[in-house]
Structure formats: C-alpha cells, structure tokens
Image (cartoon, rainbow, N blue to C red; front, top):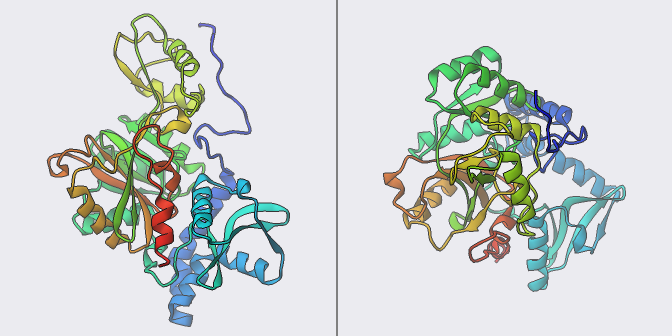
Length: 399
C-alpha cells in the first residue's frame, strides 16, 4: 500500500460526476420522473381535454408558467446590473442588446437573480429565459430535443449520422444493451447536459454496472450508445444556418518517461494559461484512469498521451478552438438539415468526428445529442480561433 503524495478533491458539497455544474441529485431524479410521467400520461390527457397547442405548453413549460404567475402578482423585480447575469451566454445577449439600443433587465425573485430577462423590443416588453427567441418562429422541437433517445431516433429516421442508441431503465436492460452494442459503449442520463454522470469507454459488464449506478443517481432512465472516436465539437445552428463550430478536448497529459501522472498533472496546472481551469484530482479522474489501466502513480512513456476525463473544455483543463472558417463545406448543408429536423430557432448539436476539415462522408462520425439552450459563449471565449458572437445572429431573428 502506497502513501498518496497528491491531494484528492473529496469535498462532500461537490460531485465530481457533475463536474463544474453541480446539481441536487434528488431534484434532478425527481424532475426526470416527472418528465417521464408527463410524457406518457400528461400530454395525452391535456391534448384530449383541450385539443390544442396551448395544452402542450401548459404541460411542457411549467417553469415558465410559474414565472408568469410570480410576475403577474408583482413578486418579481428587475435589475439593470449586467454583472449579475447567470451565465456567459446571457451576458453576451445583454451586451449585444446594449449595442443595439435594446433595454434589457434581469429578473430578481425573492432577492435572488434568476436566469430570466426582460427586453424592450419593437415597442413592447418580452420576457425570456437566457436566449430571446421570437415566439412566431417554429418551436415544436423543444418538446423532445433534450431527450437523447428520441433525438437519436429522429436523426436515424432522417438518415443522419448518429450512433446506435438503446434505452435503459434497469440493470437487466443495461446488460442487454451491453451485449447488443458495439464496444466501447457510453452511458448517460436520458436527459440533461454538461456531461453530468456520464461514463465513457465501457468495455466490460463490471464497467457497465458502474455506469448504470452512476447515471441512476440523477435519472431513472438512461441511454447507452456506441462510443465514437475523435474530438468533441459543438455546432450551433441559428435559423437553420451553421454559425459556430467549436472544438473541446478532454484534459490530458503527455508522458516524459520519468514523471507519474500525478506529477504531470501538477506540472500542467503550474504552467497553465489563466483561461484554463486547474485540473482537480477527483474520484472521477481516478476511476477514468483505472478504466484506461492507469493509476495516478503510473509513469507514462515519453510522448504518450493520456486522457484524464470524459468531460471536455477549458473548465476541466482541456483545449478549445473555434473552427467555423475551417470546416468542410458539407458540414453547412448537414447542419442545415439537422436544424430543419429539430425545428427550433436556436440549437447546439454535439458531435464526435476525427477531422471536421475533411469530407465527413469518408469518416465514421455522428451527432450525439442536441441542446435546446446552448452555451453560445463557447464560440466567443475559445482559447484559439476567431471569436464568433452568436448573440448577433439571435438578435437578428427579431428583424
């Protein structure tokens, strides 16, 4: 038994599987249960009773309805302090609004700033969550695009590249998915974002059980997919036009034949750019390395690359780059079609591909999920590449 000379982050208030976006596991699980109940029971009942799109909105947008009630009873005040914006996404929207002479304010509920905003556009006030989407544009896809199973099926039905996907609701189904899918496999909650409680590179049933147990902490249902190889990219589409293409790599170290992985992580943290977050040694990193047959004490051969996490981007110590000018021309037509399939004004598609500059028809790649409220600031704050301000394209929708 060896003594650790490194520090493992064991803060009980955080969850390494949630990464930089920790959430209440019980609330996430309850929300997933309610979503499943609404999908299977609520929508048919309301559609039968009211026979209209308004009934779906009543069921699908309970948070917005609650906000409207608070607003109606004047329980919400509005702030002009842009520094209180909840996300970088909302800050870019606010900055662009100011440049256009659009007055924008943030909602404050019971003294807490929340991710709802008010803007004065075309002579009237609009209220929106994070991104100002014109109500007259198609929005039917918001009912399902965050559901990874439905999204994968829609893509496959349209002949779009997407990995084979299976639904899992118990351990028996997890093992059946393991037997039927090509290895390695990835398991993630059926809904959700930011890679929370996702396990990659699953090659054994023992790893499958670990992945199932991890995902089940926040969701009663999950999906298993064939694991594609390549870098992870975010393609942001506005009004069926590809406007941003962002690369996000996993945090990694490069061996020198002398130092341990723990020592290489410490050295990388010491020399990192101010714009890249420190790599924290967590149980998630330890478990990820174990599946790659490494430990923190492993000495990596010279020039060998070792990935440390499945999560990607500079918030985890990874490399990022905006690549929209460099992508192969076919990508524009592919994501125009993807935008038409989801039928929403703004969508962020995650994909895995070896080389987006090469002809996609010659590569084994796929679109793995879609985000209905994408972080448009990724394209603006990438470590390399020309920044893209997606906020300009979103406000242009109001023309």
